[in-house]
Image (cartoon, rainbow, N blue to C red; front, side, top):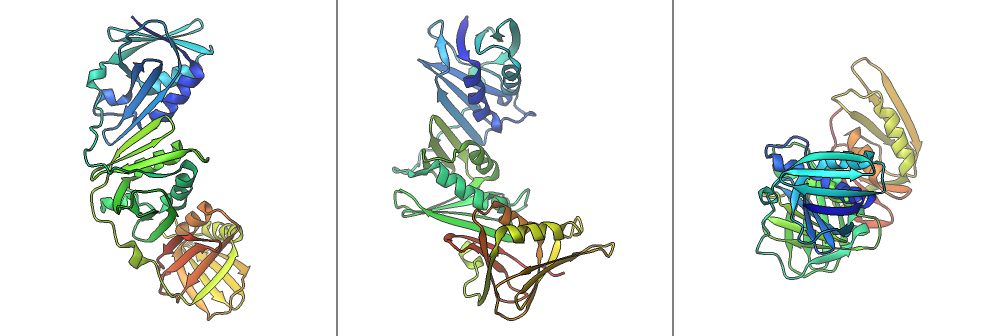
Length: 370
């Protein structure tokens, strides 16, 4: 009999960290399970969806017997049981295909599948010698500034992910869906070898969930078809998206002659109000710059109309341009700071959105006809 006494809260926290990639419906039943491996005084929890693997090493309690064997048990059911359990500690027992959870006077019995059947990701052999190093908070901030521009279910599969470009001591993240592009760069500790990889969308979203906002370090290693990220007691291994990402440098406009700086929240609130009367499929808004005024308007098939106006500091020519309002709301909702800068050329050119006090971020939106 394999028996382990653990802190219910600690085990629940650990399972919550690794179970984010576990899908409820699986073609391979064992992928709905979490692999539990007692290792000396630690317990290793591993989840996988064949594309991403997350492993967490942590101390949860004391084993009441030595030589414990690994097993797999349904991740979602175990989490639900521990959430509802009344006691501070839980006793786990498993043998002969059965897994028992005891909390106080509560007892739950689950089915297990052999640990040997769990499909661990095979580590790539061509990882670089030196990892990239940065803080978790730094990477989480960068992901937050660009993730919303990734495509979803695009036939151009390489757009359904995030480009990471490591060059010397700089890391650049780029996301685009073909209509808008977001990019951000930061200085990191690196090996100096240029690498370009595309992380899958699911990996990006999982990292945003797992990373903390502090100064704890994270190490990133890239191979030709795999990425490995280590932070804290956790390791995430992900397959990479194959394909050639668009030349993002060509998309970023250079030399736009006209610009204005305005309050981010004021612009966001005005656009959110104007968006109320846009069509469900046609999210177009018209922006009109004239003198010291920025007017935003929208109409729909019922001939309804919304109009907003902001006072701005602008001395350029009159410009009228249309956008998908969702693309503007996305960037304004995810940017920190109180101000935003818009660089424009004319009514047919893209607009460049930046932060006045941070040159590392750029967001490009293509115009639309209204």
